[in-house]
Every structure is written in structure tokens, then in C-alpha cells.
Length: 177
Image (cartoon, rainbow, N blue to C red):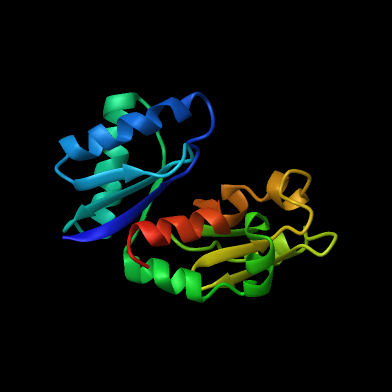
């Protein structure tokens, strides 16, 4: 058994947020140990021996069956999460303004040409970098008014979900990173 961080894409939209509390019960009924959530933004931590791809598929299928929602799940081990944290190309920005640095965990990698396309959207000091299949964003003025936030869709980037640096670090603490 090892910890797994499971991130869901789209948990804050379309009334799905209400499901977060029910996810712990779902995970326990699926046989996962010590299920817990962080915030209402689609973060589930469990202990399991299941392989990553099988875990993602099982969680997605159960979310669809139980709640009638189609949501992509991305699972990572503590080692993968530690590498994600260590690889952050914006460490100074993350230390000073953690809510303005975002790590986007990709389900099946970054689409070809996506980095160039999203870099072309950068304005006012914004920056994006790709490191080992994770997109890292620096939003010095916040995400809300960013063209990146408005236009960088899964069609452009590939399927992924972003978490600000505060959440990245909290999830790391939950799994002992």
C-alpha cells in the first residue's frame, strides 16, 4: 500500500463541488484505505496498491456510475509529487506568491506544440514552462484576467488540471513529502 494523490478536473463546475464530501465514502467503499480530501477542489488522497492507470480508470468509472459525472482523474505517487515540487521552475515566485504559481498535472502528457501556443498567450510578466510532463504557470497578476486562463483549453494543452502552489504543498504534506 502506498499513498496516492488523485486530482479531478472540473470539480468546481456544474454543481460537482457538492460531491467532494461523498468522495471519501466512495473511496472507502472501493476498498481504498485512509481516504481524505483537501478543500472543495477535487483533491483526494488514498492508500492503495493499485497501479496508477487502473486506479484512475476505477475512480473515473465509479464517479460516473455513482454520481453521473464524467471527470478525468489524475493519480500520482508521493515520489512523483516530490519530483513535481522539486522541478518547479518558479521557486522564488512560489515562495513569495504561492497562490500565483500553478502546476498543471497532465493525464496523458502535454500536446505537441502546446507549450509554444500557451507561451504566445503570456502577457504582463506571465510565464509558462514544461518540466517532465507538468506545465508550470506564473501569473503575477493572478489567473482571473489572464488570456492563458481563458484560452488554454484541453484542446490546446491536453487533459490536465491545475493546482496553485499552496495546494501543491498541502497535498505533499498529506502524503509525507
